[in-house]
Image (cartoon, rainbow, N blue to C red):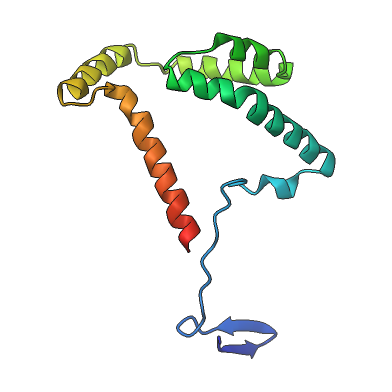
Length: 145
């Protein structure tokens, strides 16, 4: 039970005796954007999510496991993207391309060879696996509390 003192209509809480509640992270809506959208926007979001899960996810997973790219997915999804969003992506891409390091591919190739020579068969691609492990670790550890 927390002790508080009411002075001039303001609550002053004794932090030494106050109980702290741990904030829960919502993996489904990490930025809590669902609280900001209308019911109609939520229906659109749900429809897009259902489409992605039922139609695209199986193809993406197969391509990932085969370590190949299914270019048809990109063509299919591209047709559904609003033109304003495509313009924003192009603007952002153009901006970041001005800061592109021309030596990055060379450095990546060298680092990839270094990793492979140190028994990391997938080389630089093994980072995706490590990132997946870390994300799942934090998901599991967050759900335990």
